Image (tube, rainbow, N blue to C red):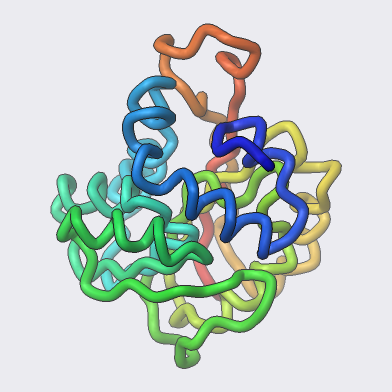
Length: 207
C-alpha cells in the first residue's frame, strides 16, 4: 500500500491512485505534511496573485485541504471556488470556511464548469511529480474569462522534461504576459533531501 507522504504522492500513476492516497492523507495532511515541512507554496501562489491585482471569482485547482484558499482569504481576495480529485481533501477544505463552492474534478478530463466563468485560476502543488501534466491547461483556459489571471506553480525539476515549456510555447497565441518566477517549495523547517526543492510560478493572462 502506498504510504500517504511526499514520496507516495510523487509516485502516483493514475487518478485512482490519487483518490486513494489523498483520501488516506486528508485528515492529517495539514499537520503531518504542510506544517511539519514548512510548506510555503500556497502562500507564494496567493501572494503572487494579489500582487498582480488578481480578482475573483477565482478557481483554486487541486485545492486539497484549502491552504491556497486560506491564503487568498487572508489577503482579502474573495469569491474563491475550489476543485480537487479527492472528496476527502475537499471535506477538510470546507472546514476552513473560505470557499464559495467546492467540487470534485479530475484535471485529466473535463471539469463541470461553464466556459469563461473565472477571472482567476490558481494552483499550488498540482503540477508536479505523479500528478497533472500540461495537457490540463487547455481545460483551464476554457473555463477562464478573457483577461483572466493565472498563477500556477510547476515543479521546477520537470518544467522542461514533462513538456510544460513546450506547452507554453504552443499556447503563445492564447495567453499573454507569461512570466516565470522561481520560489522555494519549503521553508528552512525542512531538512531532508527535498529541502531545496523549488517551483516555477507561471503568471499569465488569457488572451
